[in-house]
Structures are given as C-alpha cells and as structure tokens.
Length: 242
Ligand SMILES: C[S@@+](CC[C@H](N)C(=O)[O-])C[C@H]1O[C@@H](n2cnc3c(N)ncnc32)[C@H](O)[C@@H]1O
Image (cartoon, rainbow, N blue to C red; front, side):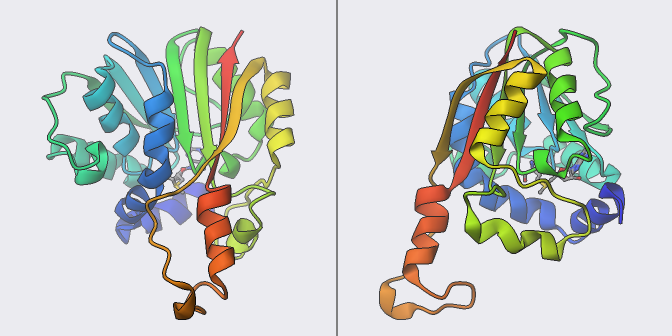
C-alpha cells in the first residue's frame, strides 16, 4: 500500500484527530522550543490534521505555514480544521488570539519538497519522518529549502532505543526506518544540518495507572509503561541549516 492509500484510509476513519490528541502531549514541547516568530515561514512535514501549524500561528505569530502531506485526505481535513475553530489541543486549552497567519496544506512527498532553495525559516515534523522512502534524501531536501540558520525540529516516537515501538511496523503497510539517536545525528550532519540538540521529551500527560491495575490491555507491567512514556517519550533531534 502507498502512503496515499494508507493515510487516506486513516483520515477517512478520523484517526488524524486521534493522532493529534496523542502526539500533542510531546509535540507541544517541541513546538514551544522552535525559534519561529513573526514574519517566519514554517514547513510541517507529514502534517496530518495540521495542528502544529495552527499552534505555531496562535502562539508564535508566524506569517506563513505550509503543511505537506502525501495523503490528499489528510491535507483536505487539515484545511477544513483550520477554517474551523481551533481544538483544545491546538493551544493546550487556552483561548486563542485571532491568528492572521496564512496556512496552506499541500499534497506532496518528502523526497521532493515543492519549495525553492532557502525559502523556509523553520521546519517541523512529528511522527512522520521515518515513513520517508529515502530519509537521507529527505534530509538533503530539508537542508536545501531551509535558509541558512533555519532549524528542523524532527520528533519521532518510533526509534531504536524505544523498544516499545518496535512492533509498530507490523500494523502498517508503509515501510518505516528505525534509526537510533546516533543514526539521526549522523544523517543530519551528512545532509548539512548541524545538530544543535538531541534529547528525549517525556510524555507527562499520559495517565499511568497504579501498579495493581497491571497487566492492562496494552501493558504487561507498570515499569514498561513508565519507560515508554516517561523515560523514552519522543526523540527530538534539532538540526540547523548551514
Ligand atoms: C503518523 S502521521 C503524523 C501526523 C502528524 N504529524 C501528527 O503528529 O499527528 C504521519 C503523516 O505523514 C504523512 N506521510 C507519511 N509518509 C509521507 C511521505 N513520504 N511524504 C509525505 N507525507 C508522508 C502521512 O500521510 C501522515 O499524515
């Protein structure tokens, strides 16, 4: 199955909003760290419901945002949600000031970003990068479209150290690349993105039941669940275009 077929089906099932809710728990911390500001143009790779751009528009007053996605249904939903009222996840439950940002949602592939050289101030991606057919090519593309000094905040929950994510490939037809933290760093550097930081962003919002309630439907032990969310969380690698 192609990216388009797989994720069009997810969008049709409403799984885009479900992902938004789950991913927001750590994505909000990555977004808060982005040095984007008034006048900036931001690219969100694998935008899904588009929540990341709406949050940046509301909290950092960016001028423009492009949400790129290989699934036309995801892009269509993201456009619709952007025209509606922002969801609670968009702003962590706070009432937004009216945003004047110009947000657009584009169908495209990570391998060929439809943007001019040096045209993007900052790029973001949450739980999407590893679906790239050629992640090295994607990083070169990100480095090409970013202006010198622009950043790429790349957040993933599927990675080698997070042993609890390893089985995820069994449930999806699109091939996933499972790098470890060092492989992310090396690939960023090779592509011309200097690694400014890399760390694990813990998910402190997910509720972890008391020990006596284990095993649960998804977890054998409380320790495993704590490790997955509080210790591993989201691996965030930040590259700066040279
Ligand atoms: C797991 S979802 C994450 C969506 C969103 N970033 C979030 O945090 O909820 C991955 C998204 O990446 C998109 N995607 C996957 N591979 C892609 C590719 N090669 N090119 C463009 N988009 C892709 C999918 O269509 C999907 O919307």
